[in-house]
Length: 83
Image 1 (cartoon, one colour):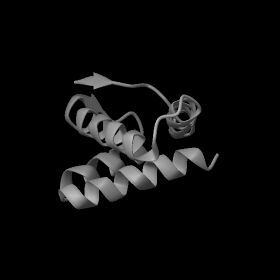
Image 2 (cartoon, helix red, strand yellow):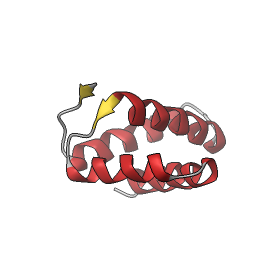
Image 3 (cartoon, one colour):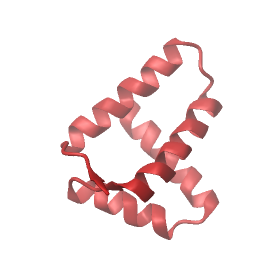
């Protein structure tokens, strides 16, 4: 597994910048959410959490149903956009 060495704030800022860039490029919120969901699946499977916050998100992701993962995706996208 890979380890991403980043702080929680840096991680949220990077995610927020990606969402902002996609919105500026005209990508719909639904498509952004779909891409974020796919990224969540990849991160949960392949990346070792770098901090306690990421570990909690990973544990929630692994415990969640498909519908709950979509809610987590929407919440993480919203959280990162509220910088």
